[in-house]
Image (cartoon, rainbow over all chains, first blue to last red; front, side, top):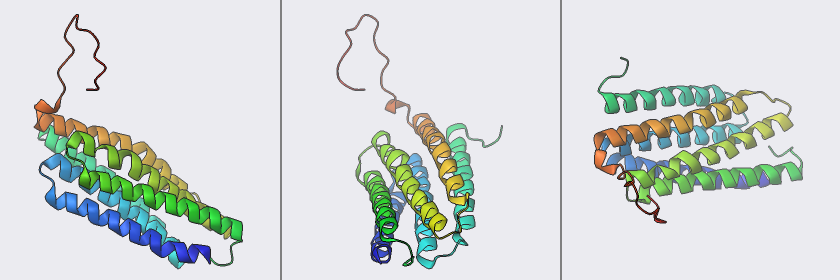
Length: 90
Length: 117
């Protein structure tokens, strides 16, 4: 009962966090700001997926969350290396 | 979720609220602060802690329901390892694009200043 009342508020807070980082992604003056906003965006999306898994009481979302964590980190590293060195794998 | 005992629901709800609050504060800092050097603080610390709290709450809930697994702890461990690495790489990219962000080196013989940076 307590969890069922708290979970919608948690989802609203996470959606707000997603919206704030998306605002920084579109606004961000320089390229590193946008990379940082993408990093925050995928971490918040992962948290929202985990809360959705609690809401529906299913474990199907955890594989998705793990894939997002792995590919998001690889994407951040590739973007940063491309910006910093002009090449991803030297 | 309703078949969980009351104390477990209270603990899990507290973890979830704290985690969502930390994630919100991290994104708010990312949107509000004025400089890439300041903006990096929000996501690299607050958001990571918030996601960690939410993942621990989820792991606890599924363990109490009798379907526990190591998935959530694996994701939390992975995020805790990779968040400092990606923050460091973002900072390296920012310094490469705009070298004027780097603070000047200390002068030899100068008195140590109490001002930060």
